[in-house]
Image 1 (cartoon, protein in one colour):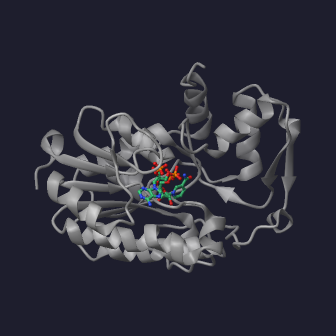
Image 2 (cartoon, rainbow, N blue to C red; image 1 turned 180 degrees about the horizontal axis):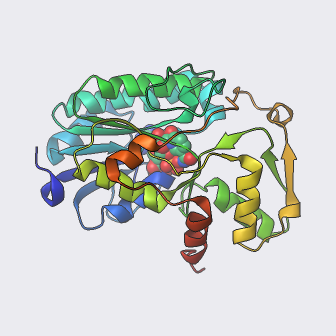
Amino acid sequence: MRDGPNARWLLLGASGLVGTHLQGALRERNVVMTSNRSQVPGAVTLDLTDGAATARLIGETRPDIVVVAAANAFVEECEREPEATRAINVDAVRRVAEAAPDALLVVFSTEYVFDGKAGPYVEDDAVGPINEYGRQKVALEAIARERAAHLVCRVSGVYGWSAARLSFVHQLVDRLRAGRRMRVPSDQVITPTPGPDLARTIVELVDRGARGTFHAAGPEILARPDFARRAAETFRLDASLLDMVPTAALGLVAPRPLGVGLRTEKLRDFLGHGLPASVEGLAAMRNAEPRP
Ligand SMILES: NC(=O)c1ccc[n+]([C@@H]2O[C@H](COP(=O)([O-])OP(=O)(O)OC[C@H]3O[C@@H](n4cnc5c(N)ncnc54)[C@H](OP(=O)(O)O)[C@@H]3O)[C@@H](O)[C@H]2O)c1
């Protein structure tokens, strides 16, 4: 396997929130990117549920590193449509793994692999998902771990700009700027993760030969209302438009693990640094806002 600057990367799902930031982090690298329904300049169109097309692309590109940022990451949709979402979140990734048996396989997972009863969690804590999205991610992690050369990156609350999918902070900014109210779960915690830094961290982990499971998340575990207020403050918006509502009152189909949160000591020990805290990450997002 070629590594370092010579390695050939295949980025599946370059159009998503995480994928958008990975595009930036891989700008100087030898990379083939794919999108599905969105248009991304320079990206190949690929529906990962098409096994033949997936195998063909992998055969043509012969990647050293395959990053699977493509997924159906909508927790409610996973609960409502378990088979259709499993087809992309699990089955398609299994085919990718089979088509690229010698590549380093990088996949993204979530704190929803845990039940939230005893968080925050370290990488080796026992999983116990309470919704379909979490169960699919447990299955995805198992596929990655079938090979030695894998990286499972558990992330949470990614924020940043992206055209295709609006992060929580992006939605908050749009709504509050328009003077609209926004409901925020009062009893959920997140580990806010700045997208650009997450992307650079993934590349750094690969470059430095990391293998296994990492909580690739920011350094703080915050109550969602605190993070939402901090975002409003950073963008100088009216936080009184935020309505803090218990999860049970939101009418969601998928149960949410409330006391989750990702501890990131392993990442910091490995890299010698962590990701920026939310005050810094949100300020960087504000400064990077695309001009209309
Ligand atoms: N964002 C978070 O806070 C968060 C938290 C925990 C875990 N994660 C995990 O991180 C990963 C990336 O999440 P994200 O937030 O970047 O998701 P996202 O913004 O919803 O992006 C999803 C990506 O998947 C692609 N995709 C969907 N269906 C596809 C298909 N059938 N074939 C090919 N590509 C397909 C989309 O392509 P098109 O748009 O072009 O159709 C898009 O590029 C996911 O595994 C997610 O579960 C994210």
